[in-house]
Structure formats: structure tokens, C-alpha cells
Amino acid sequence: MIHLSVAQVVRELNAYLNLRSPGMSENRVTAGSLFDLNGQPGASTRNRIAVQVVNVEENGVYRSAETHRTRDDGMHERVKPSVRINVYVLFVANLDDYAEALKAISLVIAFFQNRSTFEVSGNGDGASRVIFDLYSMTFEQQNHLWASLGAKYMPSVMYKAAILDIRDTLVSAELPPVEEIATRS
Figure 1 (cartoon, rainbow, N blue to C red):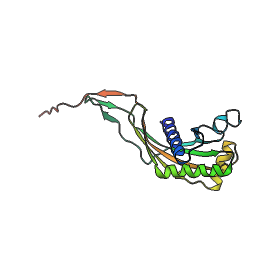
Figure 2 (cartoon, rainbow, N blue to C red; figure 1 turned 90 degrees about the vertical axis):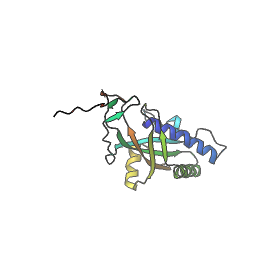
Figure 3 (cartoon, rainbow, N blue to C red; figure 1 turned 120 degrees about the vertical axis):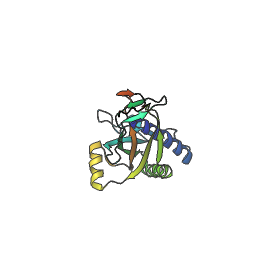
Figure 4 (cartoon, rainbow, N blue to C red; figure 1 turned 60 degrees about the vertical axis):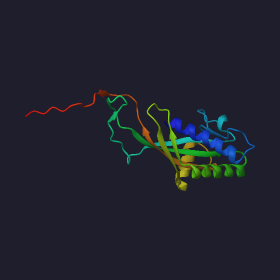
């Protein structure tokens, strides 16, 4: 679900940027790391807005208690409760021109101001809602983040994406519906 959410946001953000500032390359936003596995600058994110997941945490506030669900044929399935997570997504304007980088970050913020909720489907268990909220870091947190990324600060903005349902579609048991209740006297 995380990869589907990031891919959908990248597609829609590219479409938004093409509408808001035409005349530049079609794919200005790409999901990927600023550096490859050898620590060299990533070629796929050069002169683009890089979208990078920097943290994943469980959202314990909205813990699902659903252990059964009803199928269309009336049978009940015993399933594990869905997991709700927060994914911290960093949008980095990895551009040579500083003014263009600031403009790109402004457009990213405008995009999420205009649309912060997405319905993402494709995990085999229906759609999941993903809600993006601007996440403000302190200077100390930014310092730690950029040090762990192995980079110097670049114009960027971070969003916390709350993914409301991630569930393995494995069914642990099928249970027939209750059709009658017998009582003894």
C-alpha cells in the first residue's frame, strides 16, 4: 500500500505541476532516493523533485478491532485486524537553480493544500484512504534527518501520510452464517 500511495501522489503531482507551470519536462517528480546504494548522487532524481519515504510508524490511536468480515455470498471470514500507519514522505527540490527549487516546493505545498486526501486501491482488499498533513520539523530534527540521508540541506518539505488500512488478505478461517438458534428447555 505504501508503494501504491507514493506512486499515485507522484502521478498526480506531476499532472498538477504540468498544469501550473507548463513548458518544463513532463516528469518533474520522481520517487527515489537522492543517493544510490554506493553513496553517489542518484541519476534518477537529478533536476527533479525527489519523493522519498524517510520513516514509517504504527498509528496506535486508530487500532482496528475487526476480526471478521462478511463476504458477498454470506460467508464470514476470520481475518487479522488491519494496521494503520503513518508514513513520513520528504519532497526534495533537487534542482540546480535555487529560485526554481523554492518555486517547486511552493507548488508542492499548494498541491497538498488543494488536495490532501487520496483513495488508493490495488492491494486486493478494496481502497484505502491516505491523508497528507504538513509535518514541521525543528532545526535539530532537520539536522539529524539530512545527516542520516548523507546530504546537505536542500529546499524540501515533509508530509505525514496517514494510511488508514493495510491488511493481509490471507483468511485464517471461513465460517458459515448462523441460520438458526436451538434452545434447550
